Image 1 (tube, rainbow, N blue to C red):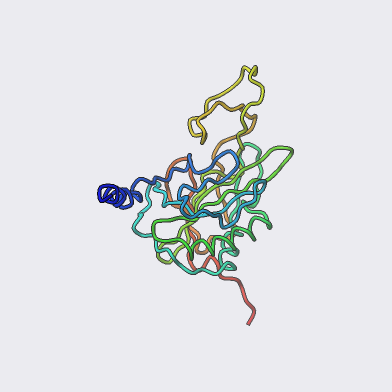
Image 2 (cartoon, rainbow, N blue to C red):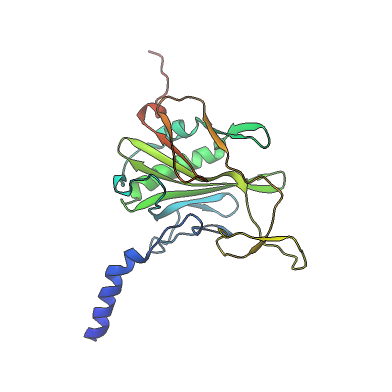
Length: 231
């Protein structure tokens, strides 16, 4: 009995180190998959619209992991103001639009605020939005975390292609996506998968930071969520 108890203590003490968060593995074909199953819940979860939850802290290039200050309190109205200022430029289609529509903006500001308050220093808030457009899904994915005096948002994908498994086994044109969560063959969709450029409606308090080539890192400071008032 003592032997089993001793083994249990060893496993319990080493379990946190066994958890690894990889952006390529935290989304399954139906949406967000939480690697910290002990949480056993989502902050927001709608199969056809997206998911928001907590994940173990994700290490990306140029990020100082020890600088994370969760839990932290940031009002949802401030998050909404800041995130409403970011747009994307699609050079392929020669078009520009806001990254978050009104519906997504309401959801992410509410649950990002809640997530930042619930998260500990070893967790990030992770989100995924799925929007239907011309019979195809476009997907926006990323993480949110707080550091001293700043709100940080890293996009893994902005209005990109959603991948679906090929239903017809006789289809010849298939491609193996190494980053697909299930590492399986999927039907190649005819859409542009290039990185989209970020633009802002106001540069006050908003900065870009270099990171992994396929990601986009945006930093918001206090002046970015201030609104104009009339005295």
